[in-house]
Every structure is written in C-alpha cells, then in structure tokens.
Image (tube, rainbow, N blue to C red; front, side):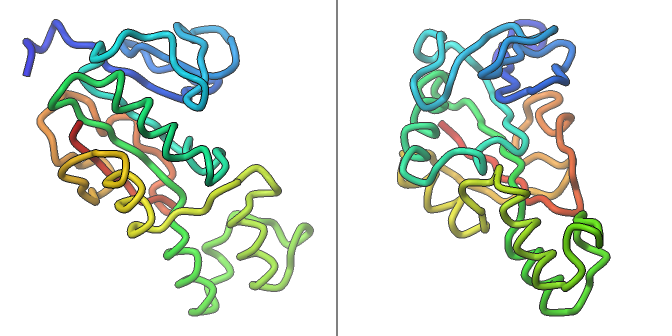
Length: 183
C-alpha cells in the first residue's frame, strides 16, 4: 500500500454530496464534482490510476446488461491490489421485512403505498429509478465474473481492507449491504 499521504481514492457516483479529500466523480457536473464520466461508456482516467474506489447506491441504477462493463471499468482504473467498496440496496433485507410484516422497515409513505406488498415493490424499484436489485449472491457473482478477487461482504462502517477511510462514505445502513473486492 502506498504511503497514507500519496494515494488516490475515488468516490464514484458522488451525486450532489462530494466528499472532501476524495476524487469525486459523477455522470452529471455539479459543485465539488472533480470528474464527469459514465461507468458504462468509460471514465476519463488512466488504467491502474486509482488505489481504491467507493460507490454508494450506484450500481442499482444501471441496467442489468450494462453491469458487467461497469464493474470491469472500475477494475480497469484500479491499481493491482486496489479495493472497490460498494453499498447496495439489500433486496434480501427488504424481502425479510415483507415476510415478517415489518412495514416500518420501508421508507415508502402510506400515501404512496399502504399495503406492505406495495411498499416492498415501491422500495425495490424506488419509484422507477432502480434498474437492477441486488442480493449478496448476485453482487458476488457479478464481481467475480468481471475478474474481481476476494469478494467480501462487510458490515456498515467496517472494512476488510486497511485503506484509510474506505468505509467512511457508508450510508443507509438499515437498507444496505456492503461489499469489497480486490482488483
């Protein structure tokens, strides 16, 4: 690992909340976005130019056929031994809440969906923005299929790697699963 003051860490899909001290990238230009690019068409970064990357609630907005290219693009920009950390909406948790009748799990207000099944569907597709739901098994297979090694499920705020701050961008603990993979 490089010295702690000489690494590049990529916050991919940062949206309107870029993180200080990160190379913040998004498809849309905005204040604090350092790099505008699309995972599906290629990021304007050199091969092996990033030490580690974090994407919080990013991949679910990509259509299933485009996911292999997107995770391959992330692998391309990471240095050998680099780590990717993802936060993904956890479909298994949503299904468990549905099966247990836990309507309070869902962020969908009653005026949008009263029935727990309607809440489940609305949350899974998040009003039409989610194109691909994720489970741990699906995330693992997707990453392994793109050549990632040591795909690990992690807890909120806890990393399987030693990269400083890699879990600092974790959010949405209640609804998310966290995954790390080695390039």
